[in-house]
Length: 113
Length: 119
Image 1 (spheres, rainbow over the protein chains, first blue to last red):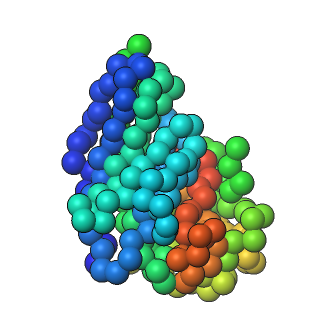
Image 2 (cartoon, chains in turn green, purple):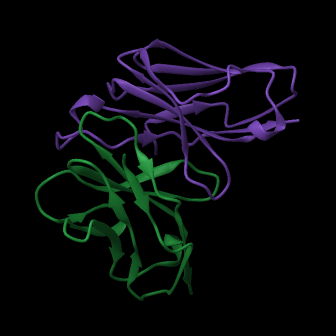
């Protein structure tokens, strides 16, 4: 079985401050980890992924995430948040040969001007 | 801009109507997906087509009927829906899901969704 936990419902951050959205996962086998962002009334947009290699992954719009195998975490980070980063963020995991993607519950990020 | 195109963007239908949602991708992907999403919730997987064959049906009621006419197109036929079926329906595609370990595969590309309201 594979699952993702996003412990917080909402993350509030002041514009210009660092943004962190937490994600932990549980899988049997090697995890393939993804972050997606969803703006109101839009589809999900792919931000970044970890498949293999360097544990620090850089993605779109200045976001990055660090894969930590010992802590089974894949937290999303941005050094300086923008008001336009306010959206719903989903962490997801799948494994090799498995086309079911397990999503976390999502985190609403609110960036305060 | 998404490379997965969904039509229509909005659909209002009565419980006795028959309608269809359409999805198209031209990225050469061999897996296509239908998801249902309620407000502020994660997407729920409904169906997966892999190489144009239905590979996953997540126990979806028969009033939802998927169809994959070719590798670029995916339809979702709707009949006798209930008000609780109102939701955002998302189509997605990905490269060969059985080789998710490859660097250039794995992620799903989503369309903008079709907002369905059942009266």
